[in-house]
Image 1 (cartoon, helix red, strand yellow):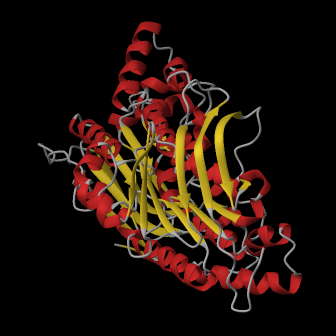
Image 2 (cartoon, rainbow, N blue to C red; image 1 turned 120 degrees about the vertical axis):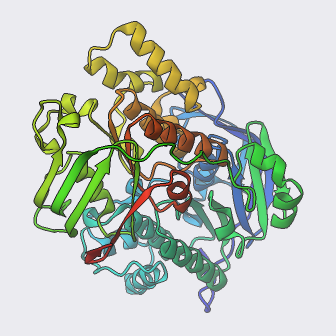
Image 3 (cartoon, rainbow, N blue to C red; image 1 turned 120 degrees about the horizontal axis):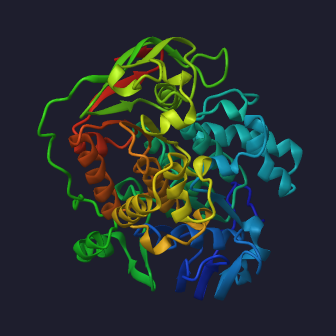
Amino acid sequence: MTIDDAGRVAPAAVDARGWGWRHASRRAWAVQDVSLRIEPGERVLLLGASGAGKSTLLQGLAGVLGGDEEGESRGELLIDGEPTAASRGRSGLVLQDPDAQVILARVGDDVAFGCENLGVPRAEIWPRVRAALDAVRLDVPLDRPTKALSGGQKQRLALAGALAMRPGLLLLDEPTANLDPAGVADVRDAVGRVLDATGSTLVVVEHRVEVWLPIVERVIVLGAEGLVADGPPEEVLGARGAELAAAGVWVPGLPPTTPAPPAAPPGEPLLRADDLSVARVRGTVVAAGLDLEVRAGEALAITGPNGVGKSTLGLTIAGLLPPASGRVVAAPALAGGAGDTPISWRSRELLTRIGTVFQDPEHQLLARTVREELEVGPRALGLPEQAMASRVDDLLERLRLSALARANPYTLSGGEKRRLTVAATLATAPRVIVLDEPTFGQDARTWAELVALLAGLRDDGSAIVTITHDEAIVDALHARRFALIPDAVV
């Protein structure tokens, strides 16, 4: 890697010549017939509908797709004229799933890991680590355990690790997906500052299009058959905006449709938290003094900045974490004789009472195929085969997963994995549904369909709890807001 006295790296050039990739377990190509040239120092926003192959292209550019045993490639994908597998030190990749990039137990060591692998002199590594953490505003001690970080903090950690390497090509896969609004701006501005300082080439995949428009100069749109559009943002999103929005691309000024408000007022409380304190790690309380109700026929949105305890609260409400203090109590209409505290219920008792969608989809994938994943819960309940098949087919259709029914869940895109975990939770028809960042990775079309599905469940009397930074879903579901802030709740 060449770095001048001002800290600027030699920006990388990207060439794709009829490139495509097919996972070993899949018949369909994840991405195909991509031909493009990205000049050194260009800043590119890569768009496309969910499942169009955006993440696959980034992983190909980073040289991490694997060999022949992992899948089949065609065409060429080059960095500076060399195959990407031989150019790994030239690119820095931030994955869609930040947990997949956490390697070491302490924050400082994790950020330093990439630099150490590149042979950066030791005296230079730690100044880079501190500068990268400052750039993404991850203000935690260097010895903070990485397991103690929230999902949003782990995203900042992954970005800091990539920035510290000073790559000639910076590849970002939805880097702000699980961040609060202030964090989104912080990360975007941090990336802009790094690009200004280093001159690196940028390719960013993001559904929050308007966030990145101030710093990108080119928009490329991927479709099922390769490139759909390529050009300046105003040209691609302006002249072709309506066409792209209809295909599922998020286009500023062309929002997706939203469901009608609930026709009836909320019903009875199904869950109640009294003076609740929550902790992910025993003895480390992240939020305290919480009083809330989860009501039938209503959506409740748990909001607040990263690291404030939203996901921990959700897991505690769902009966998957014990309260640090206080109680979560279920009404008789929900408990059905199983006891009034969800944490005391067996897993099978939870299935029809409280369903949970984790922040990280891969934390709840169990089966070899998408269809089998949707059958796990109904089989545990002893549902007859015909009834189970009907329920699974309906969910596959409604969440646009039918074509993937025989696919390995781990080969799905991030947005497809999210829809799969939502479908798997709904397969047992729980009365309360707790969803952590349910719209993560969704294009405009699947976002609208998912929101409509949740609104329908709300109107049928289910209780919806969504933990989210997506203000649009809060508005679309007409959700009652429960906002956590550091050291308080409002």
